[in-house]
Length: 115
Image (cartoon, rainbow, N blue to C red):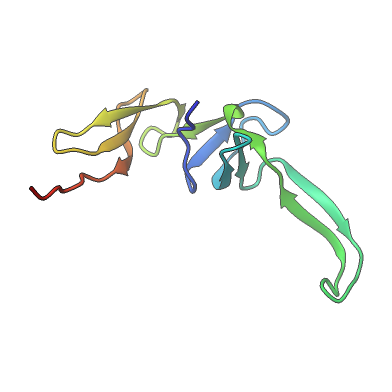
């Protein structure tokens, strides 16, 4: 199944301990179908002092969430929504919000072929 999310999209966590939290996608792992969302699923790691980390202490790190547990937030209606694809007449595609029909982003620009 093709993932309809992209890096830097604003998403909302729908399932799990952090449900309802919104954040930006920091990275996507398409092999395991997981995303890292800013501020969600934060793990606290205790680090001892070393030359690499002279201060030591507790570090916070975001951990991956299954991509099926997050939904894209539409920039115009500010609701978590599914996305659809709209084909432009001059070529190229756009991602659209299924609730309000607004354009979320451009997927691919029209390619110019020389004949």
